[in-house]
Length: 119
Image (cartoon, rainbow, N blue to C red; front, top):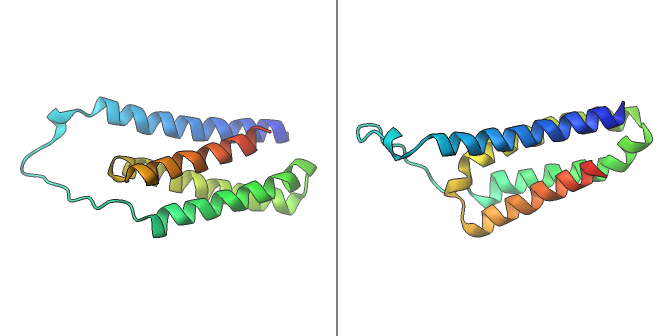
């Protein structure tokens, strides 16, 4: 059961990353309308990325308890994993506006979470 949950979680994260990336690929320069200009500010590392890092650290810390079958840890991990998925989608949308350092940190943190879940 744990392995199935783990695989579904990893599949959901992978699908969200692929979906966000394919959406960027499908939308080209022709989608921009000169009358509808969206002002986007770079993602602030102090808020969204820091919160994402905090959630991933919490999930990684909970994962050993989840593997042992601790019901309260599984429940908390599920909530944290859902929060991570939601934040990941938001950060994927902002990836183009991140500094290279922020993008690298986001990729590193995402990999850390995926690696912990794959063990």
